[in-house]
Image 1 (cartoon, helix red, strand yellow):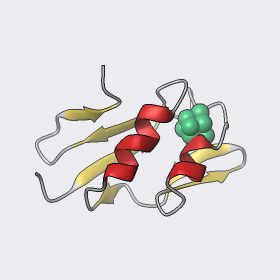
Image 2: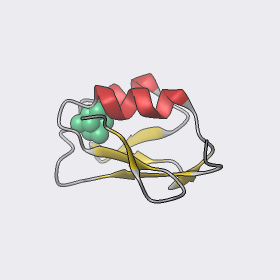
Image 3: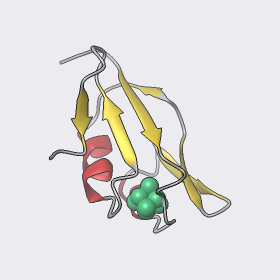
Image 4: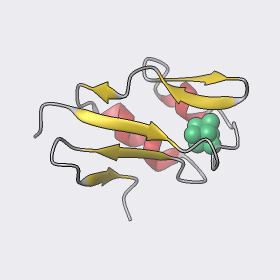
Length: 74
Ligand code: SF4
């Protein structure tokens, strides 16, 4: 497993459901109704993948240290 992941939220897609902040409050919060990662580079944690996979509009992306997309899963 890589040592860091990169987390992004597409503000053009996010519809502000807050599911990600509820699933992983230590990684996402809502700012002005849109999700924002608390950190862009994170220590790998399954809850981040869970949040990305639970987003109904696939606004959250997680890339590994080799820049491979690891969530959301297809
Ligand atoms: S789960 Fe997706 S749509 Fe909902 S707040 Fe998070 S990023 Fe936005």
